[in-house]
Length: 120
Image 1 (cartoon, helix red, strand yellow):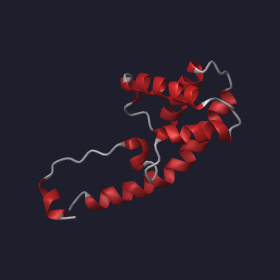
Image 2: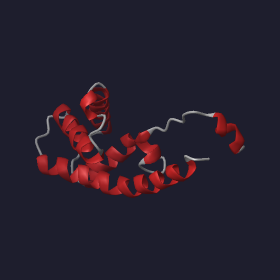
Image 3: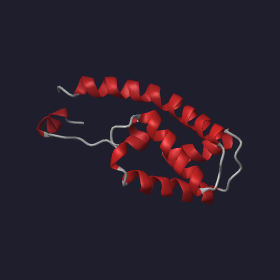
Image 4: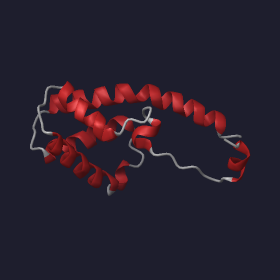
């Protein structure tokens, strides 16, 4: 890769959902695993429907812009549970904790790397 080409760039956009918070794992795939991990036996189609429902609602909610990973994930999972008609707040918290605990080391690593290349 020719780094010189990037010197003229003013901005590079990174997709958060899988790029900065993991090594390329799409959030939907992670959620299939999360539901199974916490013992909720749901069809992949139901999980996918709830996932994209929560996505749509979160994209339209400007209050979430500066919320941080844990509050965002707590809200995101709550929206999924509402769409699935699940009332298991303990499972919501467990899923949010598992998701964030896995994401946070990647975010720290990638923040360090982005900080290093920002001045190139």
